[in-house]
Image (cartoon, rainbow, N blue to C red; front, side, top):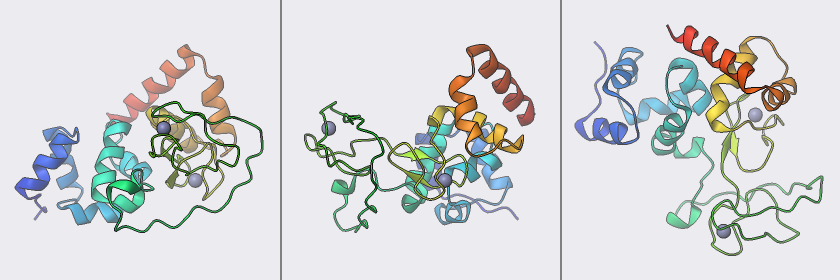
Length: 194
Ligand SMILES: [Zn+2]
Ligand SMILES: [Zn+2]
């Protein structure tokens, strides 16, 4: 017998952007409660199980179901949750970081993960690692060192990973791909879904 989501869980998942078909698909693979998502653990695994899922929806679902899978984006909202301070990372270049929310310039000693000095929100968006599934702010994954690709392009990065491209080659390939090449890759992602 397949597990069933409760009425509230269904309502929340629909609100996160899942379709009825995708809910049924989840039930089919054995996910029937919020707790089951913790076994999936991260956005990349969820996208592997459900290749037709919009990466942004996958992120929202996992943020709700497994808050620890996505580094706490708004620590202010829930002060009870203690978030370990990020390891200090030496910023290689003199790149100036501007807040993704209010565009305020961040101080020189800014390290990825710091909150914005102006608005107090996470200065950089939380990215998902296409390689190991970890998430965090900054340009690179703290867990495996892979360079992040935009969330909307995660399915392309995962496709190239299945093709056997290396961790370092994939972000470069995606950054250098023309619109036409990207379209071809999306075509392959869509065919893989059928
Ligand atoms: Zn800000
Ligand atoms: Zn990684």
